[in-house]
Amino acid sequence: MTATRTLTTAPAESRRTARSIAPERSAKAQRRWGKVFLYIALSLFGIIFLFPLVFMFVSSLKPDSQILQDIDSVAAFLPVGDISLDNYFGVFDRVPVAQFMFNSVLVTVLTVGLGLIVNSMAGFALSRLAWKGRIVVLAVIIATLIVPFETIAVPMVYWVAQLPTLVMEGGVLKYDFGWLNTYQVQIVPFIANAFSIFLFTQYFSTIPKSLDEAARIDGASWFTIYRRILVPLSGPAFATVAILTFLPAWNQYLWPLMVVQKEELRPVMVGVQYFFQLNTAWGEVMAYTSLITIPVLIVFLVFQRAFVSSIAASGVKG
Amino acid sequence: MTVTPPTVAAEEPRRAYRRFRSTKGRETWAGLGMIAPAGILLVLFLIIPVILAFALSFTNARLISPNPPRFVGMDNFLRAFTADPVFLQSVGNTAVFALVVVPVQAGLGLLLAVLVNRRMRGITAFRVIFFIPVVTSIVVVSILWKFMYQNDGLINSMIDAITFGAWQGADWLNDPNTALGAIIVMSIWQAVGFHMIIWLAGLQTIPEELYEAAKMDGASPWRQFTSVTWPGLRPTMVFVLVTITIAALGLFVQISVMTQGGPVNSTSTIVFHAVRKGYAQQEIGYAAAISLIFFIAVLVIALIQRRLTREKD
Image 1 (cartoon, chains in turn orange, purple):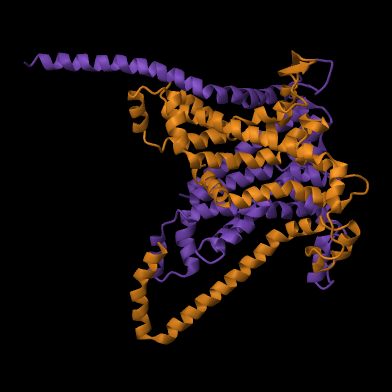
Image 2 (tube, rainbow over the protein chains, first blue to last red):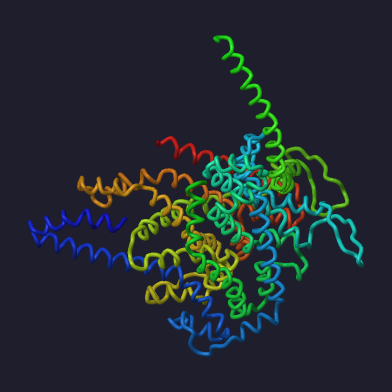
């Protein structure tokens, strides 16, 4: 693309140079200055976007007295002075970090994983199968996109508190009511997702239907067609949905705050509550927030390209 | 000779129809089977809670109560608008937040998108940097900024350094005059990268030839923006405005982590108020009514926005 453009513009430019050299040089200089200004602007924005996080990571390495001392100078952003990992050890003493991490990873992996299966199957049924009521179901699913979770959160607490559940009691499987203080209450309500179904439906309908027909003639069942033909062809759709559901699952806060009181079942975000006491130890707070941010940042930096295209896809198609 | 073709023609479709019917039947069952898991979950955790929210809003239900909920008609709605000044203030705060955040965040996002929409050395690094706050949890961001907004915190020391001591800053989150503004600035900072990416995707759908034609006609960069870029971004603009508005109206986590609605309710929002009433104070019926009012407001505003942005076509 760029190559062809330079090729086609090259003769025009040389003709212009032949006519007059001075304007061409000034245009070039102008372009160079434009570039410099652009880099300066981008760097300024870059600093604005990064300084709070740099401050967080740096502060997590300093004792509180050092943080306060450094705050009036550039030292606030540099790992200088009394640097140690003490705050991190302090965090492990104060809260069961490993347990919180385990809970968050479990909830996130199951929500995203089960969501991919359930929502892609729904997308398949809506985009490739002709069945009665398909149009109505699709319309209802699109309509539910407008319901913000915040509006149903409180009634939902009331609702899940009455749902039946199975519990193990002394080796016997029993029947009980109330989903409060369980893992499932953090996972099951978020598996089916109208937006994910919508994205799968859109993506699947771009794949030629002749593939299905050929497979049907060979005697494949619909489920086989879904599993053996559609799923392998839909990598980008699965990546998009995985990324778009990963962030909210990891970042869940309001919901677990309301439905999980048991410390051993709480996710990392709710864990921050344990740090606000009369005298907040800010160094430890920064160490904890760094600990729960680093995994997401690593995932993001590794899959950066996929992240950006997923968000872009959600905007273009939504 | 002339009789046979019609009979064959009539026979053929009927057989085809029968075969069609049977595969159609199997297809219906396959379709229902494959949508069932998602369908059941959506009914259980979306449709029923919506109906429940609607039903509870006309009752005096409490989260834990020995008495069954009682029908109270429009009492909850009347109470919200006539007997609950905190609710009215929450509505006002939410409106101010949305009115500032929506245009500023959309505009800044577009500016950033235009800046990074070119092939240049290191441009990907800038896109990544602008996006980092988006992947950082809003809970973490809120705690971090709460720390920075302290009276002797980083923000005030930076203001002091930049203005050479001419301006002292403020006790941002503890002053009713500045608390909401402080939360607005932080919220814009956190989410602007998300909208930059959406705008960027929109920019990249505009054909390069249009710019070449504009340049050929001697259009200035500003003219190129107003005549080529902006019209090409209309569908993106609708999406960006609607998503920012819905997100802004749902403001909750920042409030919950940073101020708890204070000082003197200057940062209380509709969703925060609903959660405080429904969860902390156990008044589910009243909270459901507030949620319903909120939902209707979101719906109306989203529809108006769509209509307004469409009419200009």
